[in-house]
Length: 120
View 1 (cartoon, rainbow, N blue to C red):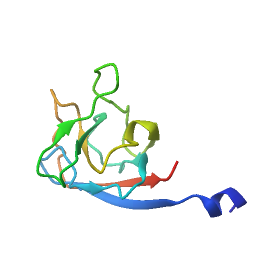
View 2 (cartoon, rainbow, N blue to C red):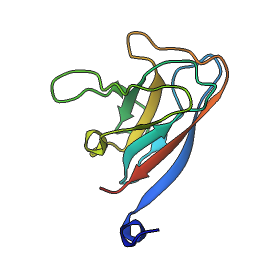
View 3 (cartoon, rainbow, N blue to C red):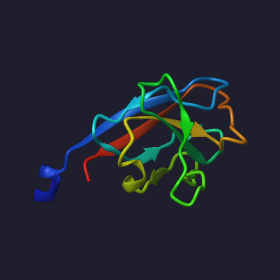
View 4 (cartoon, rainbow, N blue to C red):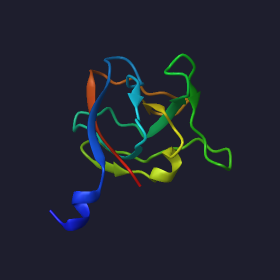
């Protein structure tokens, strides 16, 4: 462990996409930013997109960048995908989606994702 690691505030969480579903349960960011997502090797191939809520999950909207494009993270089974934490800076609650808002991809079984959230 380096000296810088000692001062990095981060949290590892697990979020699950249920069988035949495309969204994880609600992830409370607690002032941290989503920095990476690791997919299980059994992941039904699909990229990742995101939803956000500012009212503790009562209302969800798709996450888009400042140019109006849906935020898409290229992903693959058994791989850790690093994200741009600045895209998640103002978010309180997040859900990770398998596929896009127009083409969600249902997972064939329950899939657990490992998330790293960190202060930046």
